Length: 461
Image (tube, rainbow, N blue to C red; front, top):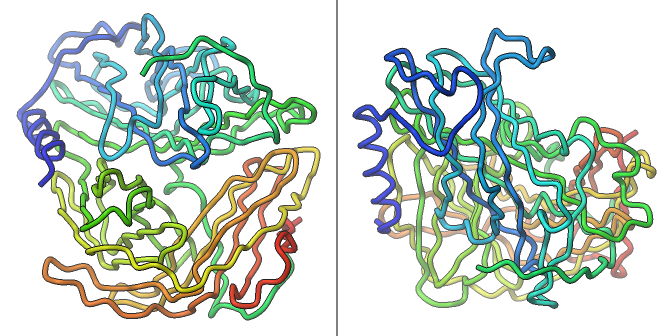
């Protein structure tokens, strides 16, 4: 078991004995409660992979607000908050493979709480990106109107007397940064540290969900039309955040999965834990990270059964392990699949997303889904690749393997791989990031993809 996972589980075990007290928090009346009727809320931050062109993604966090159930939100009642003084500017891309940063703790009165509000800085240097092609130069990001007053994270939880609740905010940089085209380079002080169908068709056409069981926020509720980009060349920050309970009622509430590879072929690959819901025909990426130094770790992970562990890298065959069960307080691994196998053939799938309302911007997350077969837990549909479209153009480009995925049932013993179904057959699903943008789907056979840039995904209207 990796040292970082062993350390976290030890911390969780200590918390289960009954942790109380806190530091770094301030706020309303509930925040000062220290009687036996009080508990502790601890908030941490972690990250999923960002786009390859991003060397850094900085966000500045000023405070986390917490709302008590049964109080009047509209009247401003029932709020307590963790204040970061001074505000913390954090590079999300340093928070991978189980790395987290503590944002603070808060004493709360015993009872239920309905939501959190993550308040980001508003200064020109507060939220920035650095491109891999232009290292050391920070580019300011703008934010939609609905984010400026604090990002609402609906996540009901309960604090018990003398108990600790720990919540980890999974800030997905890959979903959160939308390029507007050619960004304006503004030097700042460096911070240390469808409706169309092409080719064959799949067995069925699942509607793919881009949120994490209703917890991931990627559609700000009040985005003005100016948020779509227009002539503004700055990248757009549309935060996509999932709330993962890591300690609940003083007990561990999440698990972890880790693994390693035999050589450097997998470095830079995306490793994700996914769930396919056959009833609602949806795929959800629960957690994801990138392989670094032949190793990877997904920590924390929401408990669940029948997950798919998906390993994907451009130029290589997709690897899918089915039937992965994650229990609270347990760490799985190290998982080993040896080395990645180079694909014999690749195809570029590129084109444009046409939103339902062009004035709302053309930004969407385009995902390539593949139905790789049926396992002991039922149908297996996975996300193989994904990309964000620029807000101004809606252009997307994915490079997909023609080879069948390598699929095996997860086991502690050597894995028995077989070729997955629907080789080269994909469903491209575009999830518009605004309610007026819409979403659409496009089926394609990668063997017969036509001219580059010829694909068109038209949003359902």
